[in-house]
Length: 175
Image (tube, rainbow, N blue to C red):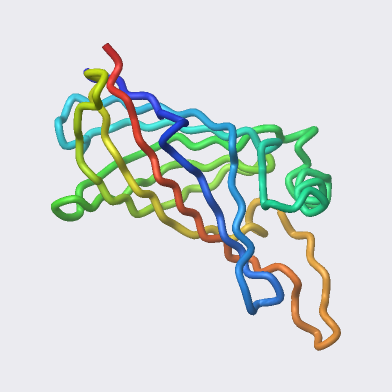
């Protein structure tokens, strides 16, 4: 069984959410960790775990970040981590996979399905074996109790319920 861990230096975890339903706000979680265990060279039997520190949320705007950390949204004081545990990782095509698992966010655990593109495996200049993946998906934030919103003058909403997820992940094979 090979063990792999996320290389945070060469990985990023992003999200996009519509603001005023006309443009996206992009944010990231800057502190995260994850691991995979697999006996298959193509990762087809991988068991995956991931967690992110919600306090590390970064939307490039300090006032918005403080609001996101407050009880209106993520409530970091009571729910400091976002956690994911895979239930399956199945091959869909040559480099395409479907990752299913349980996502815990804001004290709520729900099943999610994510698309994964396998970028390949290579040795770095230091002799470490690394593999790359791009993970994409969507979730409905209100299903996790993240329901804060405000109405616009025209009766629309400030923040959409749909959140797009995008993670570019490089993992290092452990000796």
